[in-house]
Length: 289
Image (cartoon, rainbow, N blue to C red; front, side, top):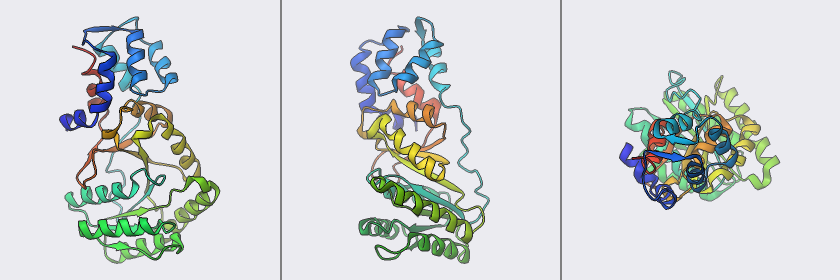
């Protein structure tokens, strides 16, 4: 897993190498600041980290500073004794939401869980078609309807079907058109209410998909969605295609939400569970001897 993470953050590590040309046993505050800026860590966070560090920084001191950002409880199996476990997948169009749903379905199948998909992004016909293709490829059932149909009806039908068929896990796709923010907010709130009517306490988790290539700017998206319906956790996609891997620190610091997974490519198996210690060590390996 650690080697996969190094590969994912190749572009970020190359950007760090341009600043930290030679690995050292100690670096100065100025050097550490420049390295973090190059990796797209938010400047306010950098200042906060430097406040508690000496003028000359060792690897263990840098590690302790960076790992302190990830101060939240992460347990992927929270509430999974509930059946079906209903998960609503949220994010803007283009963030990799539909592909990530396919990866989650694949991940759950490998854990011998039964999965049902709900194509509740009825705003775009392409979203329904894409998720249907993934369902066929992964051999998982899907509840879908035509473009323009009420997405809340899809939510209700998906949960009802999962209950009737004793499905373990439900993954519901949602629309992500932030340019019509008011309409989207009301739509998502209604979907949450209908999920709760179909099954008490559903959805059990609302997972936000963030595009890693957008760096720290994705934080604003997260805050908007969190204000709309509340977000329980994050998956970051496309980190293999960007030098902005330091934005993970900014996202964790600003949002105080668990990062569950990161996407590592376009295939169904290209999803790994996020581990903060491995992530921090991947960055520090490019800086320190």
